[in-house]
View 1: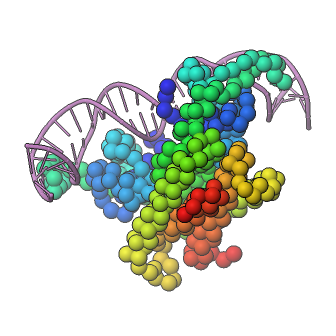
View 2: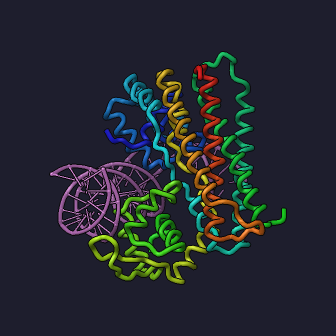
View 3: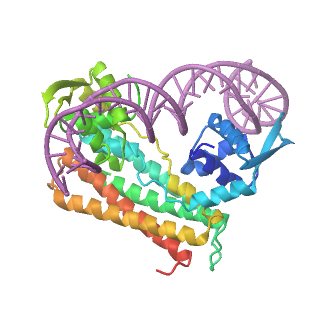
Length: 182
Length: 182
DNA sequence: GGCTCCATGTAAAACGTTACATGATTTC
DNA sequence: GAAATCATGTAACGTTTTACATGGAGCC
């Protein structure tokens, strides 16, 4: 029973629907990939470990593809482990490679710095539009809030919207103070 | 010549002042630790690699401690490598263990979830105050902006302020919609 | 014919964390 | 006298990335 974070990403996805290893890998690009990603070569061994620990189980299903697929589901024990983990405080400091660049931006070429910041701002802009599009698709939540899958999905999207907006504005402010026209 | 990010954290610190391995380790908790951290057991081997590549050099100095210390400085080549890296686009998706918890919050105990979110909001509040204190200490920047060390430090702090503010408000909104009184 | 998607795995290499190892000086 | 700080390193372990390996179905 390893203590890696990946296992909780997998349990969290399986708490919502039954999935194959391949489908889990894809979701770890999108939509969960927005805040946690992993490659398939990590997923398959981790699934085997989770099954050995009794947190997930699988049945073999003839899928749409040519080969038999393993459809995984969360066990009651898996659900308990996940539920206990989510209310645990997360480590506070995240690594931010972009900020590391900003910290030493003064050592780089000014014109290249402006180009990099413009690209970054554009990236935030696009991601913001994407989050807002998904939110619009989901529509309004019921007013006495029901804390279910959708509620949590919307919560993460709202955080995304807030984050991208502030990040975009910060890029713009920095560009302005660098004296970059338009 | 490895391609890890740590090397740029070290180069970025050495671009500002000459430091020993131990001092570098401490700065990777604070202030750079706000967005990049590393333990001393990573720093010492990486410094050796950087020196082998001609990006840093050291001289042995009798420090305040009992033992001789190695004071490292950036070489011209190290400065070039750093300057080229900072204007390079950073990978966009960062891992966010906290958001992974939020995504599956619905599987956890509601009261425990509220407690966790309150603690998190408090954390953002404290970090916000810290950044604002440091900004006040630095004071205002010259108006025709000079893109130097201080300018970049202030840029990272402003981003920190903006981030903590939005994160705190998001926590509060979520607590509100969970119907948590105060 | 080549590319992408479906689908599963293993292996090697790189990277990061924690523990081991040592020891003087300063502060409580 | 105990704990923290200064100061440097190595070793073991865990995690992550990239490459290796295979192969059918559908699309351009």
